[in-house]
Length: 185
Image (cartoon, rainbow, N blue to C red):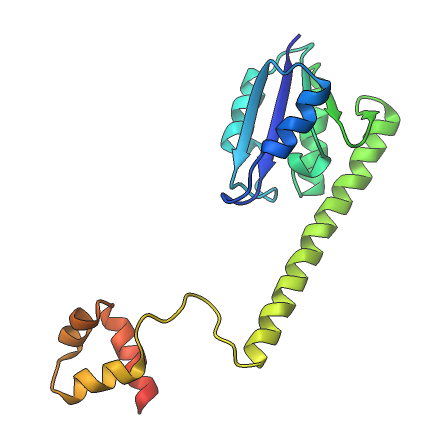
């Protein structure tokens, strides 16, 4: 009859500390599992720590997490995960919902809110794509900053350097030299 906490953050520069603090205010956690830098779009059983959690939990245990979207961003995956845990006799508590997920009302809430989380993810991607498209249309450079310029390539090539020698002198790849050389012509 252990209380198991599950935390998830999507990027490595995020932290699970706020989730941990929130759960520790209410529960005495016996075991913790945390997937850091793992998107909620990755199915639950494919997340390394969640897979360990599934192997660890037993009938009578309680799984606590702060929010439904910590379990995932795919509606069907979240519903299947919760259903599988409940079928195994594991109580699932999502603290911000304040509803026992083993009830009919809890099941309905999981269905609705997991779909909302999925839509939220899709909207976020749409906004990001729109921002990238706008930046491209405004002529802003996207991606990694340039470390060498076409002028540097032109200068060395006009001095008789080969493509390989130019790449070596500039500390870049041959393909970068070729790409920048094409933009000169």
